[in-house]
Image 1 (cartoon, rainbow, N blue to C red):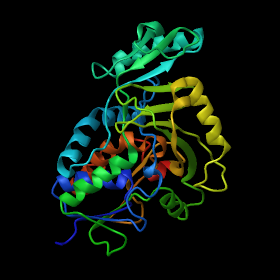
Image 2 (cartoon, rainbow, N blue to C red):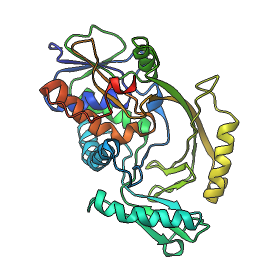
Image 3 (cartoon, rainbow, N blue to C red):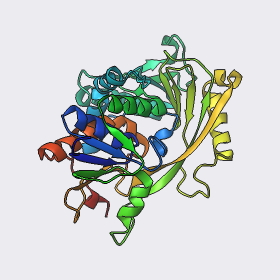
Length: 345
């Protein structure tokens, strides 16, 4: 292979997306991951690409909005190059409204969404019985947004790998790392970064999820009291996820997932008759600042960080890839305020 312009360490969603975007810009890229693609939290099963609520706007929410809006083009290009299916579809989301206070808040957010989302998407309050398949709602009303999309995380990473290999990119377990280097190494990377500082810059948060043999592939997602129910393109439906900051085994599923599944049965009774086909547990990288960490690695010239995707990694990956490629290949720094490593000190 010709000399390398960019080495990407980490073959999760951030690393693979950056490698893909840089390759499209003409860079010669190599990806290194000793455990293989999607071996960490990017190998999950939920894939809810859901926006933050349209209020109290900040750079993180704007960044996420822009990424969600560019996702369709991003994944179409990946699939066309490699022939894989990422499972992306923007089918929206339904959220039952539980009481009058929540109803009032939802209506306020519907108004702010008009200003913040413009004509790109809609956040609206509807009577539950106006839907063809209404979801249980104590108030009789439901939120519908048209910005939320879905992805099948494992299939998405596989599609990126196929597209990269079709572009001549090597994905290897170990190799020399010439040229500039991006470190997109998830929880292990947070631990390495923390060693340079007097306190942790982030931590791993465990999540558990379940996958059912329920084909609702054309239906919108449900979001009920923090629970995501996500129909996938392959005829499965995912339920997730927990957030556990204290745990003994990062890969073990337990009674916390059992409780989550019971909540899902109450929210979508059809799941009770469906076969449970997979249980998943993994640890997601959460930065101390709660925002992703992007940009130069201080005191390490030529090295860059892309970490801290936590629950929104797949949703913001297209934009992360764009701004990191702008910075590394073209010297254009468009990293938002609050997203740099030093903001997590």
